[in-house]
Amino acid sequence: MMANEATMEHNASPIWGGGRQPFGASYGKLMMWFFLLSDALTFSGFLAAMGLIRFKYEDTWPIAEEVFTHFPFVEGDAPLLYVALMTFILILSSVTMVMAVDAGHKMNKKGVMLWMGLTIIGGFFFLGSQAWEWGHFINGDKGAVQIEDRTVVYISDMEGNVVSLRTLIDGPDAHGHGIEYTDEQMLAAFKANDQYTLRRPGKGAEIFERGEALKLAEKAGVVQGANLVQNEYGNVLFADFFFFITGFHGFHVFSGVVINIIIFINVVMGTYEKRGHYEMVEKVGLYWHFVDLVWVFVFTFFYLV
Amino acid sequence: MSHNPNLPSEHHESPEGIWWIWKVFILLLVVTAVEVVLGIIKPEILLGHFMGTTVLNIIFIVLTLVKAFYIVAEFMHLKFERKNLIWTIALPAVILIPYLAFIVLAEGSYMKV
Image (spheres, rainbow over the protein chains, first blue to last red):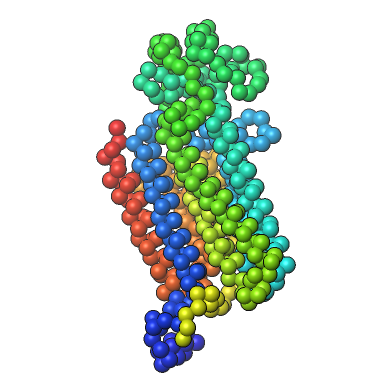
């Protein structure tokens, strides 16, 4: 059948002579593919840059599962589960988008409305999850101290298990979030409790001897939370890449939701019914799947590896 | 032979029904679940060094590429496009992204402090 088609095209007019689709795809769809290809290269650049910096500062680079440990309504550590949930939400919203495209092929307006609506809701769920994740990252978890060479080290017991500032200062039974501690409080508590020491973040992290840790603590400052200039989890570049890469992806999700809403309104108004085809849904669908695709890589290179 | 930018793409054969969508969905879900479980338990035998990283990390990357393939081929429907479109999109990505990663990661090792 393909051979037949090619022969017919050859006989009729040159394939690239205009008036036909050499790629078998419309102008808009083709341009969406080219845009997504360039966007994929942009994200590759970000992730490769993060890999480079991570290898360079391997000794102070935090381990993601020691950073992202929270899950809503769960006390204690639950690493990876929250990002797994975010992945699930995004894959599910990709499925509803495929359903919307499928309904569009059948010129089923109600079906497109239903499935696009669900896709938009999925997008909002993902954005909400990301806001929650950012909130926890910015507010911080256990707190840490910055020593004289400006690197961040964790407070830990002698085996290297990380201890929070709250446990150090207010004791192991203390509760409460968002308490800000001073350098003096930290130093006094650190001197008084000789079961604690300091350790570096990262793989195979160095655990300081108690004596050395005491000397370091004298000139150390408390770090709580993370932003672009300080980061309680370790190297500040980790926070910079976190905000930049997940932020850039989150911005893609946000713009995807906005575009989906615009197309949804068009579907409701019958624009594509009149046009005779729902290809616009297919085009925004490509963008939406791409957002899912990027997340798959962010998930691996930020949280797993 | 007027050029109409609103001309729809030609229709491509795709599997009948919607069962294939759920099949891909379950596959993506299972692969993600395997990744999460491996990421939490981190089996000792998979932490040996291999190709500059650990065996476990290679497994993660391979599983990620499997997921990426299914998203692009099935969800984005690239598998059912014409061959010239498939290669136009796939080749630059398949050549340039590993090239970039190699240059930045392998050559960047000189930057290590």
